[in-house]
Length: 71
Image 1 (tube, helix red, strand yellow):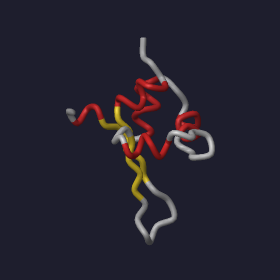
Image 2 (spheres, helix red, strand yellow; image 1 turned 90 degrees about the horizontal axis):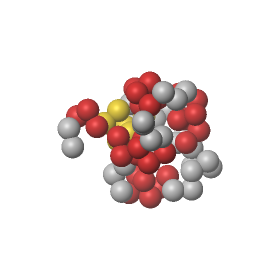
Image 3 (spheres, one colour; image 1 turned 45 degrees about the horizontal axis):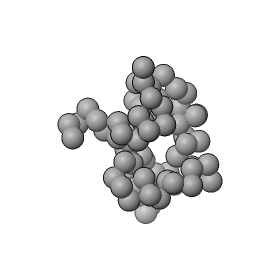
Image 4 (cartoon, helix red, strand yellow; image 1 turned 135 degrees about the horizontal axis):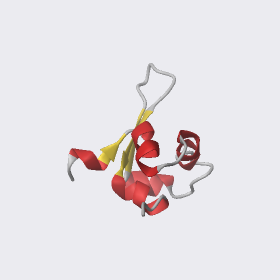
């Protein structure tokens, strides 16, 4: 995959014309029962530094296409 197929949540929301809040909801385990499988399949990645309060997501185009098809 090229680097353009990986995005931050902000970029993904912008490119797919959705709100960042909607995407953040999609990335919550309580809202998406397939989240662990998506991580295992390499569609998304989550990293949280042990000394930090918040983590970061990397999202693939394949993940976004699965939930937010672009016309």
